Length: 542
Image (cartoon, rainbow, N blue to C red; front, top):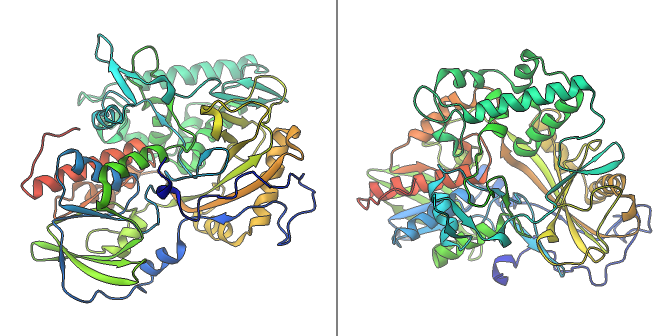
């Protein structure tokens, strides 16, 4: 791991050495917090300076760069990777943060790397051609079988045990309850599984899969399009799904992928969670996940490495406007404290809509999209948890917790089960208005979050009493776009998808699904369109 990619405030340099183990009710820190730790997150000061128009105006002569990528999240990195893959070098990628990656960022301590956001990538569908091409180039796909299915490096796949659920006081393998269901509940679950399998296999009258990922390749058949016009909760009610364990599991699923309650997302999105992925891989690995200690930050780092010096962090893109056939891009260099103007022939606007509408009002309309706030914590422990029943898994969820559980960051390493580690704890703030929830997120201090996180972990694993050594908390005010009812037919979203230059939009917002494969698809698509606009068309990887 290149140290320079992690040298910033979101890297917890202290590690575990010298940390003082303490229980929830321990003596606490001098600052009043119960544990050592830090309150972290995206650079709000820089972001708000863009929103409020507070950045200095560009002065001096214009700099000419043929193609500019504005934003270094997954979509922007994917666009830069595609340009580099095509052998095109006349571009620059500007990223506001010190480190690129968006919500696929990570950190590290003395024991392990860990994620600050997205922590895995499902095995891609056959349709995700560009993503498969990239994974092959990164050495994660090592060959193919006789039918052409990719062979994945087993060290990139999630190790056993993948998942476990704390159900009725005992840990069990998998996230679906296997005991204690009434005959009626079990029958409903079987009916739901059969319905999702039918959707998974369905093909629209246009010849496309009813649901797939990238979602842009899904069928536009009205049979399935109509599902975007009702909520997932209403669809479940109409289909007479009433079993409490099933509904609780489905609530976990929509909060896990969309940061939202079933009543806040469309039925199309709710069904896509189950029907949209058909991992294509040899050796029966299609249902597996690719994961690393730092999560999807591994992929972000590899894309950034492919872009090289053309990636310029600590640069805020303040304004984008058309000037004849060109595009003027005002950029502020936070390290130099200076603004400059760039004249480009094409721009890939790789930022979420809530930012793009301030940066490029001529190219980003006000959509109906809203964004889910999240909290992610990395918890250093002196010994890994265990508990009754199934042994420790990569992903650990409690049926009685309001959180989404925790991932073991060092699961993919050879760390001893009785040694130190890091638990990455996730919470989607989904109950209520996102704006109000976001304000509440930012109003709470580190100590309050630490107490809540520790209490939740101790409720799941009482044996962690006295073994929690540090809790660092990352606040995502706009973690992911919410696929609300009608998002697939939202005029602003459709207009952004159809943009044909000289500015091209690229973000998972264009899918309404904040998923790596969606952002990657839109980044590659925008890069290929920009190359065509410059007269440098290439054979599409899509």
